[in-house]
Amino acid sequence: MKKSVFPLGLLCGAMILSGCATRISEVPLDRTAATTRIEPQDIRRTVEKMVESLLVAPGVKEFVSGRRPVLDVEPMQNRTTQHIDMASLTESVRMQLLRSGMFRFVDRSSTGTAAVDVERINQENQLGLVDASKAVKAGHQTALDMYLTGTLSEIKNVTGRTTDQYYKFSMSLKDLKTGELVWADEQEIRKASTRPVVGW
Amino acid sequence: MKISKNIITAALLTAGVTGLYGCRNTSGTVVKTDHLTGTSSIIEENGRLAHQVDVVNIAYDEVNGLKRAHITMQSNRNRRLRVDYRICWFDINGMEIDPQTKTYRNQILEGRDTVTVTGVANSPAAVSSKLRIRETSQAE
Image 1 (cartoon, each protein chain N blue to C red):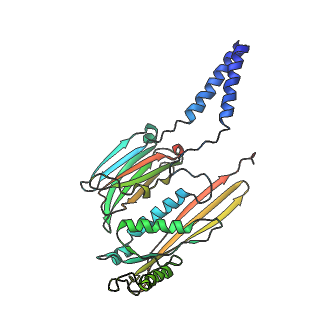
Image 2: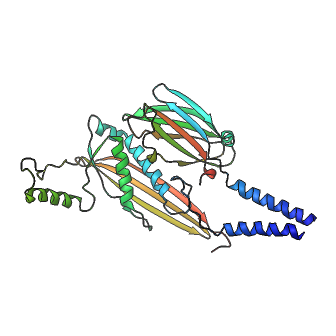
Image 3: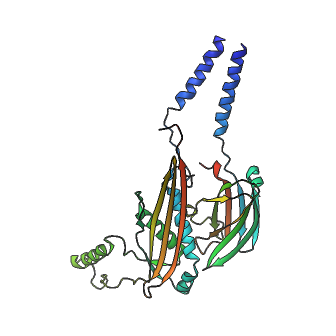
């Protein structure tokens, strides 16, 4: 009896102790939801769906036919109570649209971009190192045809131990010349979590 | 002695269950479509998922120069079913185009419901698509 209890105790002890070690592993980018907050996989899915919706929109087809319009993606607005890197989200949208090959892009909306461009052109010309005939002159940048805007908003409800979180990501594409909305769409995410009766 | 045998059996069972818990089956159902020839094939890698979800229709078209695939799934269960799906695209040489931009999306299938999912190619160079369905419960 004593002989069989000893290895069992050892086994149980080993199992308990193995739970104390911090485990680190790489996980898939599209893992299942772990919290009710906005997670990387939510952003990836939303960006993908939005870009797909934009690329097949009838209004965009009319605008794009035979040419590649110049587009600017404005930084998305965060109207949620969470801190979300909206600049990164904006870059993801821009990158996926750029890869589709349907648009050309300028970056006027990012803070300080225009000032940096002007400063660089002036620097090049003022230093005297550049061949004057090849120097870039200000006032030749490509004009904007359309711009893309977007917002992320949330509604949170807490009922007892259950938290219900709803997010809505809206985007619209506007024709700068006519002021018309060429495309608009929204994606919704809803998550719920229930706290255990006993827990901390 | 009888008690110790019971303890050993219980310990072995616990260890077995703990070990099995880590064995996740992430295989699923794959639908391959060649948009140039119009041929499609369905490969069912996961028997349990194949019993739960049927692929009942595959359609494709082209919008704004980009290929688009529509795949209809049907649940064979009476209860709600959660699956993930991903549609990726390949060029004429069979190379996957921007795999990082195509993610697994969630899909809830109500009891005996039929749902059509759509995927748009991320490049005009795409000529074939692959839909992969997996059980959400098996994903990390």
